[in-house]
Length: 281
Ligand SMILES: O=C(O)CCC(=O)C(=O)O
Ligand SMILES: [Fe+2]
Image (tube, rainbow, N blue to C red):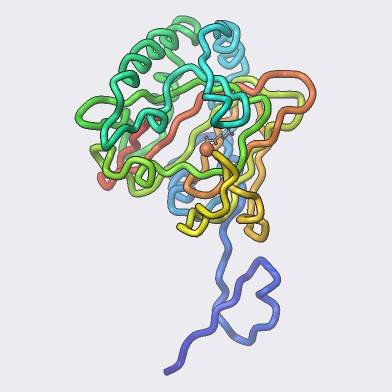
């Protein structure tokens, strides 16, 4: 049997070939002036490492949101578990999975956070603005994901200062069959509403979770050696930029350097088999 040889185009393995078929790593970071569904599809398909969309929110919109964000409204991830201080407005459903359903406290916190967020953007809801912009750019439309028929909370406002360790996010592995529609893939959406002077960059590695990785945990996070040899992209936060990547790939966030706050509007996006975008946090 004749087996076609393949070689990697980017990377050292690609040098000693003779007439073999090239294989493209396809994990670049791209920047777009506007959101377009073609590029977003490439992130969803695993062909782009990260996509930054400039001015998803204008600087003025970002300033308005951050100015009306009262500090005392932001709760925190459990610092003892996470090991880093991360503040947020709005619950992450990940924290409320309970024997195949979502704990009652989640729905209460979701309702409260939705109320608090409703007027942050000059009297409007910044999440609704983001949803509208996504729906406009994506042929299949966009809506909030549901679980057991109930719309989940989507669009937390999160503040990081010390970064986040190496991890991945994959709803189906955390909460199998939890969403009413199984997403074909998962994207992370982070729009930077305020950025630190430097640092706070996100690095995405071209590597998904494997079962053996559980032996390489460091508390809540995973050990960096798991991704030491993997292709990666690093994106520095810019005010107003929305960054999309597949969070089933391992990723981490660097600590802030210098002054300034790193505040994001954050949610996950699933692409359904019907072709619409499903949003949750
Ligand atoms: O804040 C960021 O840039 C990324 C945070 C993250 O881990 C995520 O959105 O899944
Ligand atoms: Fe993440």
